[in-house]
Amino acid sequence: MRRNKLIYALVLGIGLSTAACQQQEEKQVELDANAPVTQNTAVAEAQVRNMLASQSACWSQGDLDCFMQDYWKSDSLLFVGKSGLTYGWQKTLDNYRKSYPDPAAMGKLTFNLKEMRHLSADHMLVVGQWHLQREAELGDLQGHFSIILKRFPDGWKIIADHSS
Image (cartoon, rainbow, N blue to C red; front, side, top):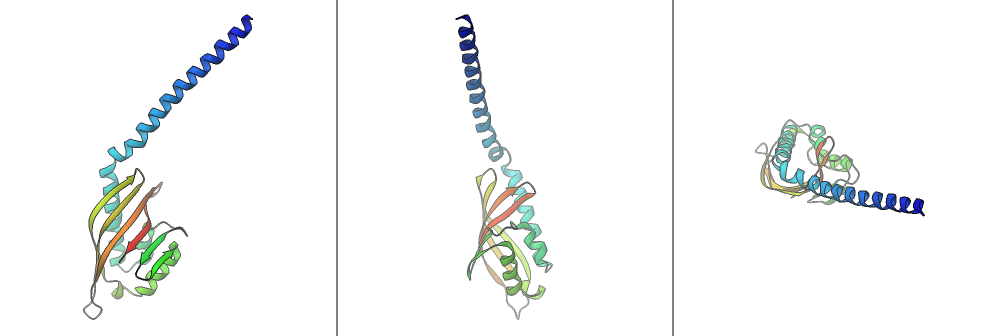
């Protein structure tokens, strides 16, 4: 009988201890989930602005391989443009190469960011305008874009791009 009481007390103690630890862990997870959004918003935005500035420089130098480094290298990358939907990093690069075969066709790219929205701690929506300054015979091009970025261990990557 005494042994049963001891086992009961031990099980009850373990149960209460587990519940208290679980409750504390849930509070910590809740705090951690909110912390990156509130504390790192400015840092994340600066990282994305730097990434887009780097992309603009790569494009303007006629280097599509460099430009594509900031896209998610996955078959699940989504690009939406005037020709419709394109899936995949390689297919997106191939389409860029076909549409912009040389540095003169690529021109000089600039972005004018209009809005940055944090969708979660690791996802962001960026909306802006793009402008290609090109030789007079080719003419300038411009339009709008919206991109969804995801933070990976090696930095922010574009996982979806809608440019028109």
